[in-house]
Image (cartoon, rainbow, N blue to C red; front, top):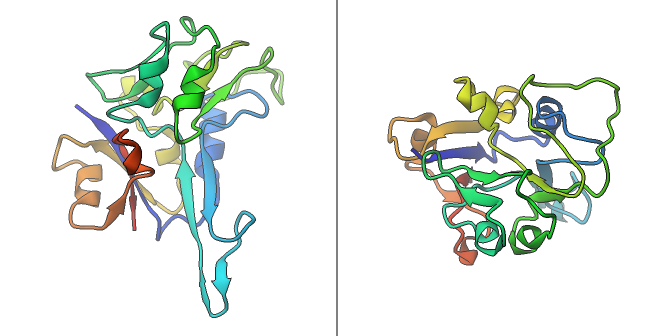
Amino acid sequence: MHYGMAIDLQLCFGCTECAVACKSNNNLPNNMWWNRVLTDGGDYPDTAKGTYPQVSMAHYPVGCQHCANPACAKVCPVGATWRDEKTGIVVQDVDKCIGCRMCMGACPYSARTFNWEEPAYAVDFPLGDFDAPKHIAGVVEKCTFCANRLARGEEPACMEHCPGRARYWGDLDDPDSDVSRAIAGRPTVRLLEDKGTEPSVYYLA
């Protein structure tokens, strides 16, 4: 099995609900985001590039790309991050992490975050899923493809909460899965393919 995702750039309108759902369901601390929505456009978010009437803009939701050849795993000195061969998910074990941040430097997608201090929250009770990952100071964190939800037979939170239905999910090894059917016969791009990381997230052009 090789879990993967496809995101339709024609349907994504940059609402950031995927990022908010990720933050809420995973009970992420203040100032931490595992997913971001970037704008391919002007110098500021949600601005177009070009000169009217030849202007263009696209939104790229970006999180961990769950690479088949993850650069982060190669540099981790303690084996705290690795690719799970059963699922294709790149795992980060906060109990093993020593906070050296070498994986952050190696990741070409800036998809990892670091808890510089004891996690603080906007409210005084946990949000999101009852089995959300724990958060502790001095370690690196990242998108997990909502592995806890997958274990319960559910989809990642970003899938469930996308109002534009711009995301497709499933097993890339299964030609009949939603994600495989979405990328079949359509132009796709993967971020920074020249880095040789073989991302598991596809963007439908």
